[in-house]
Image (cartoon, rainbow, N blue to C red; front, side, top):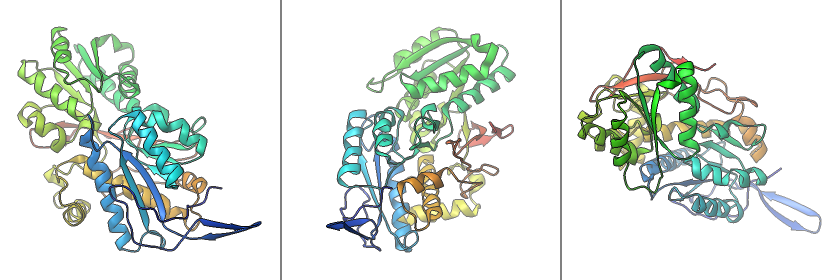
Length: 405
């Protein structure tokens, strides 16, 4: 079994320096090995710079949550040493940073690394090393494959499930739909597209135009103009925040007014719709599974009030309208739940076992009815989604909770 490492070596944006009980350091004299307990080392890479830097706030809010936890004594008396490093949304940089975290800093696990390209680049390495790649901040299908990658587990709802939700809704409510799709040219975009086609079923011929973009592209303006020219009256926008805002704004500015579906990973009012223009975003449809902090219906909700108090105290520079900050908070709570279930058996093997043993875990910021469940054969924590529509101020739920179970 891989035991917790020995040396207090503090790195990263939110590395925490308070000493705790020592766990996992080994000293060897002849054939005698003794263990000395220490803190729980958790590693992460996050795009604090580069084309997906809007997501960097996720790592910051998670670091703030672990700081709060440590001030209360940590988990089972063990404080969390959280090392979160910038990978600039670059797969080679992610590989470099993860190798450092594993081989030099000897972290117990890699938590919430963000992005399909970066996670794909580190997946085989972490599985070979038997280091948990836990709760990836991406919903690509490859993160839910315990038979071939038992050390990798998703956090986001499956992109294929989300795409299928849009497809089924379009097929059932828009019989005359002519669909145009913009998607990132990688596994992330292709998974959404596959789900969309699966959901449309025998109506997949409704898709009359597809266009892709690369993460290095400066804009997607030309793609939007081309898709408008196709004559489509429905637009499925499968993009990360920077490009999502561009696409929404450009469609409006050139007079294209299709029914628009926006993937959940870019559904933040603060980080995407505000820079795109709230007036230009009216009518957008996406899915939700946690409470939108910009939605006034949750103002009196105890969980929302607790989150806002946390933000004001531990992350005052973080936006109270950015859904990414609610997302990161929930992810950190889920990580802590896994550590609590581990008890004193803080090994990589037991971390994965407990991560695959979550039963009806429901942090307060989740939408009513949404619960986290995992098993040894189900590595997707979320399988319930709610369609929501933007009214110019916030997302408003409609229809029933969609579940793949």
